[in-house]
Length: 322
Image (cartoon, rainbow, N blue to C red; front, side, top):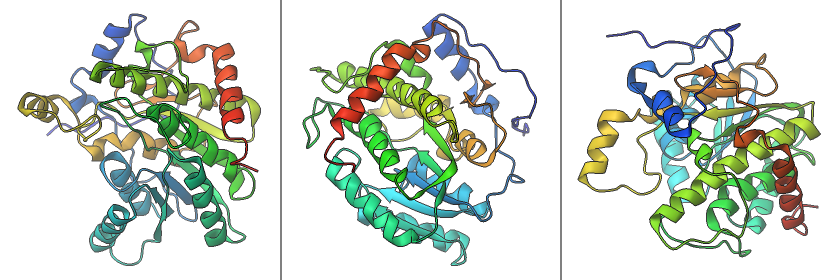
């Protein structure tokens, strides 16, 4: 069996191909062998970590890795029942000693985000969160809107995380916290992100997801610029065999088995970003390419649109974040 490659400090960033489709191919080619791993020597003892969408898939695998490295983990999940089952499974696997608890969080509803933030503040008391992993992501298969009337992928993947972080900055987030934002190279298929995108088909739902992943990159960019004390890293976890976008038919499931990586491998880039204190301030971690340098004409580098998105999100959370 081949030993999987690890991230190494001091390696120059890779430059992905300029052509979007070639970039997607190069990044995903033979990823089952090329996906890098986070060595277990990177520890998080004494660190408190909040991770969204952590009851299944990459999120659950990330929780496991965080606990194995000594972190105190707060699972923020939409389904309290599924979170309880996941929490019980982790305790059965790792024993009762790891410190883990769950919080109800529906990122698509700004009122529920506020409730989760208030509950987190009560549980923490005088303590602070050291690492936030913005992991939760929704890939819609049909058009829908949030309780506040925003397109559902934008509301969940972008606006909900924005509101959560802005709440946490008012008392529960450590001054020099590390923020890990999950995206995907698929963002490069689009050039905009907004709350009012409309579509009719499953392809439109895929594009809504792509737009939200670009939005995640833009918000990460603005976090770095506006709050320089924070350490912000963006992660492409790989093409992971999960239920994102639906389970699909037999051909889809066969493709996933052959070409996709499992959630444990998909969690490795996140674990590295969460445990590495010396990443560059604009780090883009890729599961096969390692540290990536984005070109100036990459959609993620559009600072004007990133600023506009930040201002839009600030306006939309008025009345929900005090």
